[in-house]
Structures are given as structure tokens and as C-alpha cells.
Image (tube, rainbow, N blue to C red):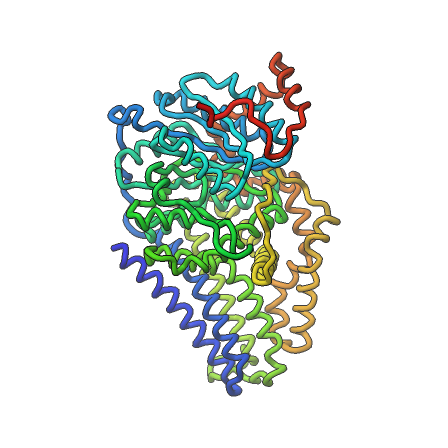
Length: 608
């Protein structure tokens, strides 16, 4: 059945690419053949296939028999053989936000009856001396508040080689034998205690399960940009993830966080050597998660994503600029996978997954190349004057116009259609009530579709630039994440996007001069690019997010009924804002100036 699903999806993508190619050939070859025609046809086919592939995942999640609930153990049989380390890697993060989440998860675990199975280890790669001092100070507070049997530990590496993967690997080598399981989180992760225990039950029930990935929901959105991401993750992502789970089977994804791994499997399978050569294609593997999933599958371990797991959360970027910075690192990591596609012993589907990851970014410059080739094509051959068909010549007097209409309808259907179907499904199943009712869901879906369509030409440019930077050897490194985000001013927005504005102007000017029939069809792409500073700045403000909430748009279940672990975190933050006797110790720690890479942490998981 799994092979049949994969075959059908691949054939669907190939079928759509073939149709797009055939339509393009009718148009581009109408006046004879030229090398630029072959380029445009190839670009059209590649981008159409990629869009169709994404649509197939949504359709796979929408239709088909309900997925069976996985087996789960009682844990009473496993006892302390199921001990789990909750790992929270940090790198120049806001320590109060991260440590308060750790405190909330510890408190949430206390209510499950299985808190004695869990320890929390904060693994710091922070290089900034002041942030490192703040981490130690806030850990004193955390350590004082977390009640047994949960224990909390902190250590800061003196050498942050290997970035996050190296940080986790260091813990496995030093202390992995103590814990049969590890729950790997990010600094902004938050999970309900019951969800963590449920994941452990599922790991215990299937001895071959090497990694279990949950689906994190985005929370704490304040701006319009972040709220659109949050709504999309809440309504659309579960369906796409269900389709992904059906497609990948036992060779599922690892997204690097909010996932539980079997320590033995991870230790024997997931050692990552540095790639030969210099970055961006050499050096440490940045997108290590998909590589680790492939290595687990190579050893015969099951890698699975369970889309039904609730109570798994993360925070998203609050503005386009922070999103683009994070996406730049992901782009470099995915393009590194080109060197791993032919690695020995990998399963065919994992190799195909690497190709998908590359296409996720390469598709953006392919789209831009297709547009550019269409604009300059008249320089190499005069465009055909009439549509090469006896049908509708009066409505479509120019071949380019007919192709543009066809592509617009096809692409729009593949991109927008699944979202509308998911919204309709939520009304039929009653899930829409969690989002405020079907009218609210449908209005929010339309708002998200309009917004993502406006934003797409801008993100397309950032991704295209990232790909070109990597091709020309520019290393993006591993910048720290701005979890809190900030409002982008218009001057800052223009500084970050002036080249996108210029691209939109050049695109419309070129179309007006060289290919007038394409002028109006390119305005949905060029106009948002020309307005990018305004869109970036306006969508980053908290006021834009409050406006959406007042209009009842982009609401999520977590906003309407705040999850228990988030209430616990709110309570922790409220306590930590009040002065206490313990603040003297914190102030003393903050007054220190530890040297980067040389400071010893106040408490350590690596002692003993």
C-alpha cells in the first residue's frame, strides 16, 4: 500500500508536469524552435511538478481511511528502564523565556504520575559572555523551583563544534547510557506533560521505533505575519503532515525538535562527520535532522511522525526579516544534502527526501528564471501573434496570454485548492468550532490565501538570493534566533528589501518593453515586490496582529482555550517578575564577566 501511495503521487506530479510541458510547447514552438524555448519548457515542467507534489501530500491527508492510533505501553512494565532526558539546546537565546518553559514542563510532568522518569538538561552553546551569565543566574532560580523527582541540569560547552548536532552528540557520548530515551527540543519548545508521557508510551510499545516526531503548533504570535503562520500551522499543517506520514511510512521526517529518540538507536546511527571542503557545501551539516532520520532508517530503525499528537508547541518568527534569516540557514543545509544523495546504504525514499529538500529552495530561482526567460524571449524570436488553435482566438489573441491564463488557473488550483478543501473539511467534521466556527475558519482561510499570495513574490526573492549566495560560495553560518522578534520600521524594511523593489520595477519595465502581453499577468508578482518595504513593516507590528484578532481573523484553538502548560508558563513568568531573596544571587551572577568558552556552569549535568 505504501508503494502504491508513493507511485500515485509521483505519477500525479509527472502528469501535471507533462501537461504543463505540452501547453508550453504549443505556445513556444508555434513560431519554430529556439534554445530559449527549451529552457522555458524545462523550467515550467520542474516548477509544475513541485507544486503538484505538495498538492498530493494535502490530498493524501484529506482522503483515505483514518490512520490507526499507534500502540502504547502502560509504562508500569518499563519503570525506570524508560528514563528520559529532556534536552533543551540553547545558543544565545533569552534565558528567562527558555528556563520558564522548562519549569512549566517540569510542573506539567508532575501531574502525570510519571515525573520520576524524566530529567531536564539545558545544553548551552552560548558564546556571548553576558547571556551566559544570565543563563547561570536564571538556572539558579529554575533549580530552586523545580520539585523532585524531576531533576534539572545545565552545562555550557567550552567548544561549540558541530553546532546543535554536536551539542546533542556531546550529551549522548557523555551521558546517553543513563537514559534509554531523549526528548529533543528547541529553545522555544513547549510540550504538555501528558504529550511527553504519551510519546514515551508509544516508544516503549514499539521496540523498533527509533524516532517519534510530533507536530509542533506555532504559538505566541503577535504580528499579522506571525498570526498567519500560526493559523496555517494550526489548520493546514495537520492535514499535510497526515499525508506526509502516509507517504513516508517508516522512513518519516525528523524536524530537529519536539521529537523523542531511542538513545541506543541515535548513538549507533547518527554520528555526523564534517563534510570535506569549506562551507557552504562543506563543513558541519547544518540541516542535520533529515540526515539523522535517514541514518536511523539505514540501520533498520522506524522513523515516524504521529500527526495526532496534541500538546506540542513552538514559537515562530514575528516578521519577514527574521523568517528569511532562519530560512537562509535551512537553505544552506538543504543544499548541502546534494553531497549526501549518493551516500552508501541509504534507502531510496530517504534519497528522494533529500531531493525534495533541495527542490523546496531551488524552485524559487527556477520560477524567477522562467519569468525572466519569458520576458527576454522576444529578443531571440518574435512571439507568435495568434494562439495555435482554432479555439477562442478572439479571447486569447496572444499565445503568451493563453499560457499565462492556463498556468494561473493550474497553479492556483494546486496551491489554493487544498487549503479550501481543508477549510470545508473542518466544517464537516466540526473541527471548525475549535477555531471559532466555520465562518471564522473560512474567512481566515481566505485572508491567509490572499496574504500568502501577496507575500510569496517576496519570500521567493529571499529564497532565490539564498540559493545564489550558496552557489557562489557564501557561508551563512548559524546565526542565533530572535525568538521575541521586533517591529520592523520602514527604513529598516527598505534597507532589507530595496533590491526586491528594484527587481519588481525591472520586471514590469522589461515586460512592458519586450513582452507587453505578459505585463498585466506579472503585476501580481511585481507589485508586491515593489511594495515589499511597506508589507514587511506593516505585517511586523503587534498592532497588525491585534487588528486581526479584533476582526476575528486567524484565530487558533490555543488562543481561544489556552493550553494548561502555557498557563503554567505564564504563572512561572509572573513569579519570576517579582523580586525575591534569590535575586541577590542572580544579580551577583549577572555582574560577572565569564570569558567565552571558559566559564564553568553553576550546575552541570556533566559532573559525576
